[in-house]
Length: 305
Ligand code: PAF
Image (cartoon, rainbow, N blue to C red; front, side):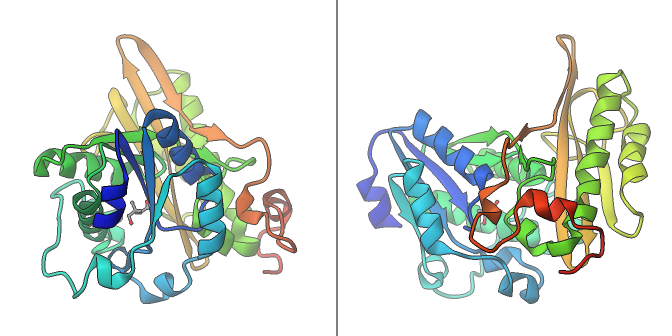
């Protein structure tokens, strides 16, 4: 990493990733390239943030494809640190962001948020970017990183970028390819959040009602949580005032997905940020012989995997 940093000059942007890139990652890279003199992206599947070894083992990976996509976006330097470079021995130092890292994902995935905080700290220390770009899809992760940067005094600007959705509304995630025939069922999560965003746009501000809109769309046994939170601290909110985020997580078969809508209500007015939607099937499904997102969405629930 020291070598990579030495090569980069001017205003340096960083896009940390775990690979298996999709349009969400590419939008971060394009933005970094547009705003910075040099853009570095990292590809490191961080074992510290996987609480389940089986989940780590099946995490999708295609480094050659990732390198080609990042290069096409104009990324100047793709940093692919090996485990021995990142953590020559199991780190004895961990980063915990109290509160923000303990709720929601921290509760349902013990150790996950600390793993993210520790690896992002390691990347920021090693690569010393001026700006670091993260997607709003991981709203809690974004709040956690903004806070750790503030607390530890990293001289980096954290840039939150729009959540990107597939054609049918499913939030983009590398894990979507693991959903298989359950992809159609998984759409329920984004459908529920869109219902809640519509209610917010019509003036509803009560957390109980917004959360109930999501519950109405997602089967009870699939939904892990839905919660209205203050965006900066991820503390539960009872009313959608100021900047809040309605976050939700659900499990379809063995695949867990998260999604959110960002809600802003202040003296300027109110707006629900649903993210941006692709106009065509995601490149996640682009390889030959793989079903397109649209085809998968048309598969009946419980259809052949
Ligand atoms: O969002 C991700 O892909 C990961 O959590 C990150 C920020 C690259 C840390 O491993």
